Length: 148
Image 1 (tube, rainbow, N blue to C red):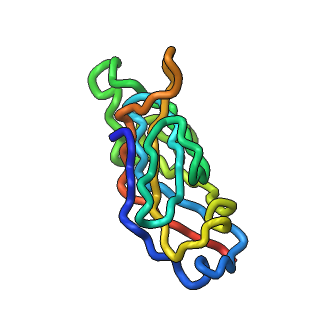
Image 2: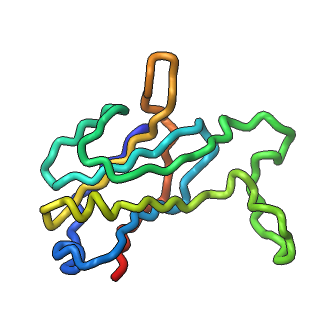
């Protein structure tokens, strides 16, 4: 997908009263098999009609980057992520291992006045004509965490 828009997410009492020192959105199992992109993250009040333009600035909360693999062009098995790993293996994980991405959304969440949010993520890449949305965004879920 090139964009993700969540359902309305109710904030906890501590989040609505802005009693936290930091807030993060954590994205799980982000896939890097496709194109490279910047995941631009926005927080909007429920009921807002978010602009999904790649140049959008309203509601901007942060970003994460994916250095995409761009498809598989190697030998057989080259793009298969190993199921098991030797506990003494000091090499970095396979490049296509699903990633966890953390986005600090503290300043945007503090600035909001609503008791709920809608999370929008745009997969933005560069092109000769400027930023464009790319069909490269895949993840299994996300969670809003706040810390006292």
